[in-house]
Image 1: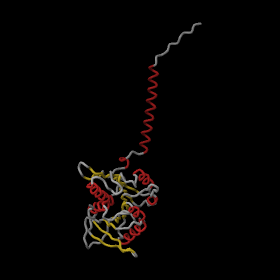
Image 2 (image 1 turned 90 degrees about the vertical axis):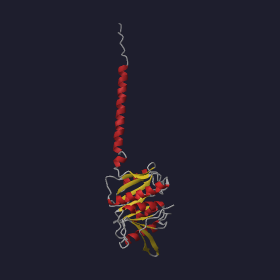
Image 3 (image 1 turned 60 degrees about the vertical axis):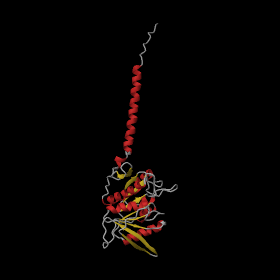
Image 4 (image 1 turned 30 degrees about the vertical axis):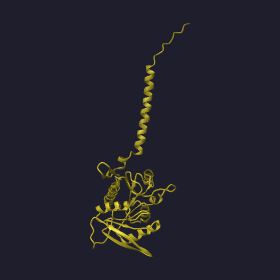
Length: 284
């Protein structure tokens, strides 16, 4: 059963000529008389709602850490319409410079980004289908924006190697949180793991918004079955996570050189062990 999204306040944003956009606001500290000035404007995927586990778990984790909080809005399945909804919320909440979403909502967040957008939070970004690579809008993002990807190792719409290739070609700084054993819907087993790991992603992103370390841009979140808790690796440098290509080349050259030297040594040893042949004296 889906938990309730943490809701300190519900409100509507005008969206003429269509019905107003339904929004919920959650934060660590919230007073009814205070204006809503969230750190993050966030939306759900194409076929989901604000009650989807992935949205609820992430948002509750984020709201438990962030003083300014998060606003989540209900959208429809039309991508262009979702982008316009982002625009309406940005006009209504002028102080918010951070956008995010999961799946199609993540695509809409990228498309809605403006020159004033400082951060993008992309959960389960649907990077590809069987026939299409959705990388162009990512490659067009300006260097001024910071982007964080949260992707599961079992997400069939975001192969991690392909994501790394796209990240290497993006003009802006990017961070990545790999969620072990999670699928596109951020589900994993057991069910309690889905909830706690999802909350942990929200907590990590809330901290990242205020303290993004450009020297450490890789991390992992997983479910510890023995301890029954969600564990986060902390932020890791790229070199500590994977070996660089230069290291691979150096290792390869070292192996080739060592093999060549060993071969010569063996051949020399074999020659030294061969018995010398005495020359027969020629008789005249």
